[in-house]
Length: 309
Ligand code: CUA
Image (cartoon, rainbow, N blue to C red; front, side, top):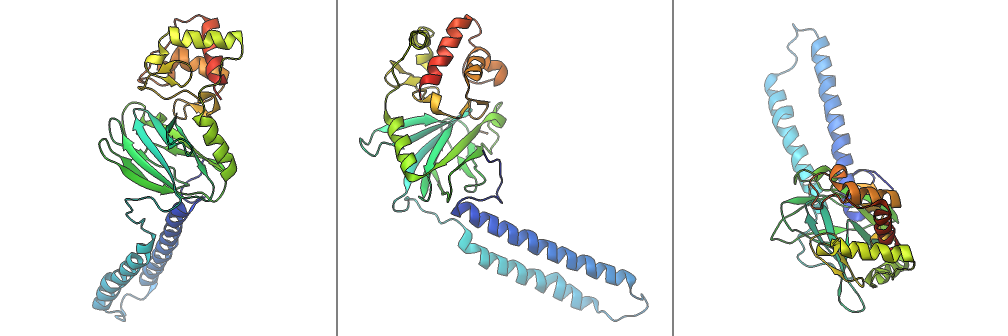
């Protein structure tokens, strides 16, 4: 997984940002070096000689020079500004992302049936195709930021914003909520996974399927315990009799890279820890710690969730 920043752009919107950043960095350094050079020269020259006129410097270097530089930069950078497009470009994949305290609800449209496909905390996108993200929030203001893919965009309750992202190569890029949104703002990460077009289509088709049936006695026990503990009051597992809408959809949670919006790697051990001690791992998360469960039950629920590929 890449932890890169703005300067390791992998797609067109991010490349525009890194180009502007480099020009400003290098240009700013050159001007700084020139000013320091002039300063050195004035300190070394013979102070009794009056070979420089103050007015020339004030009007030339103090007014004309910054005016020309700033006006030039303004005009040059205008084409890099993302256009305000209320509609997605032709051929774009449309993904809806709704921020919650402190996780991300992600929805795709099934290209076959038109039904919603809901997942969480991980956005998979096809390489080379523009992706139009429709961004909103369920509660407070959050901000969507995956530095290697695009700039930042606020996510506001009651309002739809959008952001175009794009990648030229497969990979995994970490993003982060970039607007302070409460206790677990720092652990509100997300991951974007770039897949080749065919792999993406296969992944989306798999996400559209209901949950895999429990293939062993332990997994069936895990599923029964999940329902007995009323996890279905908040979570949906399509095909397993769970249809809660307060928390992340878990229909294919086993296929995701992380738990808890980038908080833990998705392993059996981490799932057990998450279930039993979520309030230590991510204090304030909208789920109680299930530390009263006996170990076999905990292991069975964690195993069943892991089997939901
Ligand atoms: Cu959501 Cu910070």
